[in-house]
Amino acid sequence: MRVDESGNMLGIRNEKLVQVSKLFLLSRPRTWRHFGLQVVFFLSGLTFIFTLFLLTWSILFRLRMRKTKGKRRTYPALEKGSYDVIIVGAGPAGSTCAYYLAKARKNVLLLEKKKFPRDKFCGDAVCTQALDIMEDMIAAPCEGAPAEGESVLDCIMREGKGHPASNGGLVSPSGYSYIGSSAENLVPENASKNVKRLDRAPVIAIKRIHMDEKLAKAAEYAGAHLLEEHSVENAVFDNVKKVWRVNTVKEDGSKAEESYTGRIVVCADGAPSRLAMKLGLVSSPPQGTCSRAFVEGKTHNFGADGLVFYPRNLLPGYCAVFRHPNDELNFCTYIIPGNPKVTNDDLSRLHHDIMKSDPFVSRALGPNAVVERMKAGSLRLGGISKSYAEQLVVIGDAAGHIDPLTGEGIHHAMVAGKMASETLLEAFSYPDFSEQFLKNYHKAWYSAFGWDFAMSMKLAIILYKFPIILDAATKALEAKGDEFLAEWAKVMTGQRPKTYFFRPDVSLVMAWELVKLVISAPFRH
Image 1 (cartoon, rainbow, N blue to C red):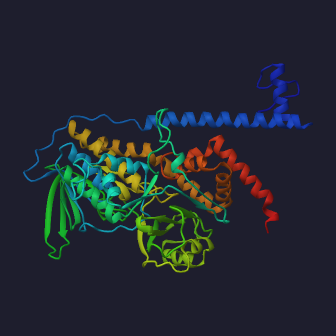
Image 2: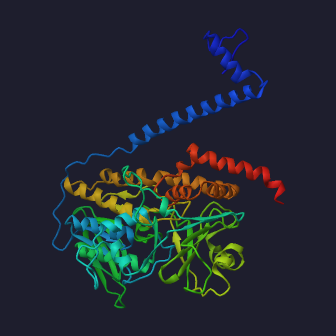
Image 3: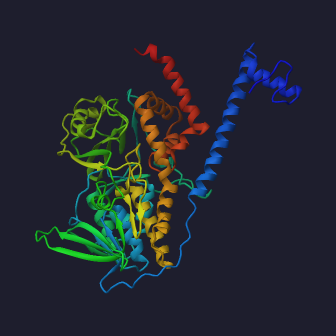
């Protein structure tokens, strides 16, 4: 924008406007008052542009994510013994999808490679959205249950297999730390005014060996046909009969080959997703990895329920300690893309080096900690570009439903599993199992959390390049206390998007702490 010597600005003669524009654009600040006005004008302009951008983006995003209407299509009748839906993988995503489909009286086959109880290697931190679904799911009756109709979550807690994380915090790259109670200050999203606090912790540590079995058995109790020890070799689509033929090999030692037919196939076979790879919806290996090692109770010095550590050489990855029942701990290390000096092959080295050499982690574990042998799992991060095809959807870790900043995926997987069931039930109502209609499932999870993954990827790179931001965030937690920690917990557990960090009441606090750290840096060395 240019103001000429006669005071014209874009052909407009307005004395007051010219004076303002000269003050903002041309004049040098003669006093602090003038400088302050220039800053205010500049920030106001940026805020207006940013707000306009967000509004435009929101409108375009909503238009792009509009649901596609179904069409009534004709399909050959299913042969006797066929299934409406075949779900490959009985993890949190697959079992959740199977539960809601079976509850709606669909004929569902749930295939699991191993026999329950079986383990899965991850951080075991189950966040609010997953807990909500577990409260909604009715558990299979078990010995000691008070009455029929007990939820999966209540069953797990009654059996003493879950530990609520009532207090926790983080340790920044430079060693700043804050431990507080987020549970006491956490208000549920979309809560009515009379709801003040959650009646449970935002995170509960539950071993996957317990959780996955409870979810799969709940799906079976709801009516799904659960087959364990069935490894899926491939799935072939019959374009004449409009069904999938899923071929399996039994893992019970017999190696017997069996095949099943169904109208829809749901790939929920984990991050490597052999089936989705064979069907062409996944073309690359998982990008990240994580470790897990349980620490025997009463052998460590850890006092909190959960603590996240950000060693500088691991960024944007992190390591964490979560408390389980009976004082047992889960120590895990996450390698997240963004650091060119760290690859997935470094996991074992970093896991053990951090336990022994990191001053904060080693102090938390103590010199006498009895730690099990490290185990590892892969992470497919950020969502795949296409999670649907003709009579096919991909959910959970197989679809990359893991946050690229936090490595959290259980709640995304279960939310996506439920969304997939809702889309498929609507598809059966037409019926319309076309690729065009099943794209609605992809739109649903992308609108809910997928778009936030892009922000997570950018933040991961920023945190690697500027670790001081994590230092500033920790200092902001120290300054603002537990209520700020509760809001931080909402973002890191997927209840709020990462754009929350750009709110003025959050970003300004962090910016001020960042300025103080930069100014004080020369005096700290």
